[in-house]
Every structure is written in structure tokens, then in C-alpha cells.
Image (tube, rainbow, N blue to C red; front, top):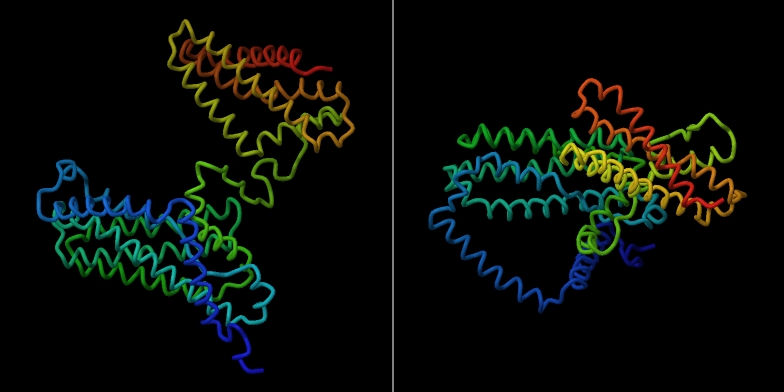
Length: 416
């Protein structure tokens, strides 16, 4: 059958169609936040005002605060922006079904998507670099040749970081991703900052480092095209990058979705927490695991713990124990509310637990969940006040106070 009988006879035309769709998608996302008329009222005055300041930076004296900034701050700012973002490959979920047997088509789309992302990255870094150029040239007396060489090194470093970070993201999951991602991003950025500091007066050495980044970039592109078995991760990362503008606009409106994890970070093997095999004990352990595994609950617990430790540390000595008791009561109230929410969940309602069993399990769970907070707050009081004696006092004092207050809230809030 002739290729002209298909809507997209070649991979190039398919990529071109997806690229135009990507442009329309991004413009539609921007239009949902602000009309073009509104943007003109912001862009035109802002552009005129920014242009006036930029012209002044080139033809007048720089602000006084610019003289106090070390050159490393400029390089660190550029490195931070280099480390953000990723690649847009324009892969779609349907390719797993329709292009599975056409490896050359997928390879063509990946290659062109990679080159498109690198071009966009180069334009972004060039625009930012041009904005900072008056400070680089006038503030730090960098020669024009060295300034152009530094721009080339900045773009090459951004390409290197984007590709290395993308390769790690599509190949690794969980904590292993971070173990590989941190060196993949920080090592090139550290080389970039160090080279910019030491070789800012030597364009040839800057170009030599640029060539090193270019070699790594070429290797990374070749390695990326040879990757196999990462299609679903490619689609996930691609979708994440395409939705960056939408996520930025909706950050204050919607909660961030929880990432998909194949195994929890804590209690990965779901081992029993309590020796008892009674149903109430297993119910208690399930509530503790749910608290620790839920990022929002764990973050709130840790945040309140941090604020509580600061509070008992900075208040006068005569008020420390009063604040300690109030904090334990507040934490007990929140944990008891969490237990009521957990035990009243629809999924828990399927299990044959009676009201007495739920109350007994809650009475066991509340002291266990409260104990770390109580011990830390007790240590923050006893160690500064009593010195070495506090090492002996903070465990019985904190444990006893946490146990008593937890039992009080259990009796009041957990009806049998």
C-alpha cells in the first residue's frame, strides 16, 4: 500500500503534527489563566520598564548592591536554572499499541524531541544570560570573548544536565532515582561553577570545558536512543514536563497529587509492629503505618514536632513545663482526630470490628503515636535545664506525660 494513503506516512510528519499540537496545548493553558488583552497590559509596560533598566545597566553605573555580589552568585543562579526542567519527547500512550513494531519511528520521534528540547533549553539559557550580561561584563570585568565562551559553556552544561537527569528519571524508581540523580545533576553544575570561577579570564579554557560538556551530551543522546524498556517512564516524564505550566498555575488551587510508588518507603515488607496477634493490635499497627506512610500526615506530624521543639526551647524556664503540657494536649487531640477519621473510613467499615474493639485499638494507638513527640519535647526541656541529670529524666517524664494525656483523650473521645 502506498505511503500517501496514511494520514502520517513518515515519522517526521507525525512529529511535526505533535509539535504543533504541543504549541496549541501550551497556548491554551496560558489563555485559561489570562486573556491576551490582560497580558498586553502587563507585558508592554513591563517590557518598557525592564528595557529602560537594562539600558541603564549598560550605559550607567551598576547598582551599589551589585558590587557586593561575588561572581559565584551569578554562576550559582545560572546553575540552579540549568538543573531545573527536563526533556519533552512528544511520546504518547498510544504509541505502545500502534508504533510498537516501528522502532525506527519511535527512535525518530525521540531524537527530534530531544533536539527540540535542547534548542528550547538553549534559547531559555541564552535569554537569561543576556539579562545578566551587563553584570557579568561591567561588574566583574569579563572580556567579550570570555563572555561568549561562558555563554557557550552555560548552554552546553544545560544540555548535559538535562540529558543525564532524563536518563536517570526514566530508568530508576524510588530512592535509587535520587541516588543517581543527585550526582548526575550536581557534578556537571559543580564543574560549571568551578570552571566559571577559575577560567573567567581565559576563553580558551572555557571553550575546552564546553567541548567536554558537548562530548558528554553527544554520548547521552546516543545512549538515550539505545534505551529499551523505558517506554512508560518516557511517557510519564514527558507528560510531567508538558504539564509544568499548568501545574505552576494550579499550584495554589489544587493539592499536588501523590506520586505512584510500588513499595512504601517505611515498613516496606509490612512487618508486624506489635507482638500481639489480637485483632485490636493489628488494627492499631495498621493505623500507625497509615500515619507514617501518608506524606501529608507525616509532614504535619514532623512540622508540629519542629514547632513544638522550638517553642519549648525559647520560652522562659518557668513556662517550659506549661508549654510542654499544652503541646502534648494539642498533639493528642490531633492524633485522636486522626484515629477517628481512620477508624471511620468506609474501607475500615467493611472489617468486622465492633465499637469496643475500635475504642480499645485507639487507646493502644494513641500513646504509641504520641510517644516520639512527647520524648523529644521532654528532652528539649530536661537537657538544657538539668544537664546530665536530664539524660535520666527525659524518658520517664516524657513517656509518663504522653501516656497519661493519651489515656485521658482516649477515655473522652473513643466511645465504647
